[in-house]
Length: 364
Image (cartoon, rainbow, N blue to C red):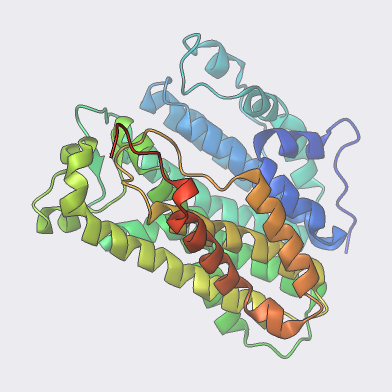
């Protein structure tokens, strides 16, 4: 296969580190044969996501810029000029792109040049996954483009939610599987259909974790990914979820969504353990987001997610502990196989610890 090195004037690892510290950690552990195509696909997806999520820009302009970038990725054309897009941002708006995201958009011409120099098979896989991802982003902007905190728009059905999580994340599981299968274990006796199915669920699970974690933030942007048909069954409308007291009625629905996300992560764990044992780096790269996802779900079970006073997040010290646990357990298959249960038990213990709860006010 043709070598797919980045243009010499494109510091792509710096860009990646600036737009995603967590994925940068995953990318660093990947074997070099898959690090480049997966890293390039992530940068392109992050660029389209930045355009789609820049709330300060009217939806019609975001859709136009997103369509131009999508066409450039799929056809090998020129990158749109994002200078006017970025210059039109109101100063200090909380939805403005970060410095790293601005740098990424500015580097799109060189990034697309790199895509054009890729091995043809890898280039086609990258274009296929970006076509699906951008279709989901375009649907999202069209659906929520006029939404506000006073006029919240919700997905209608569970099928819509499932379709969305596939378009923006489940398809990534397919892409990841095909890239790794081609470059790392083409002849391994593994059911490819089962691996692809679990890979899709793996991606959906990670996206569903993000949706449940970000519920209060999305509501204040006018977006509700919890389907309206389910809310209505609990005598709720999306606007009710701005009141933390509504959680009493929401709790069964939210708990079921947590269970659904955990089921997808279980499929991701099955996926990870289906890979050849010699692929140590790929197993670690898969295990880390699963462990963080399990931890996040556990933390969400211990709070009222509608309060939004703080964002549920796995502390860095806990992430370091997960990395250490995963590395030493690799040499002991029985211990490795219990890693997901260890993560669940660990967050449950921390949730039940008296030191994790706020002190009572006043005197007993």
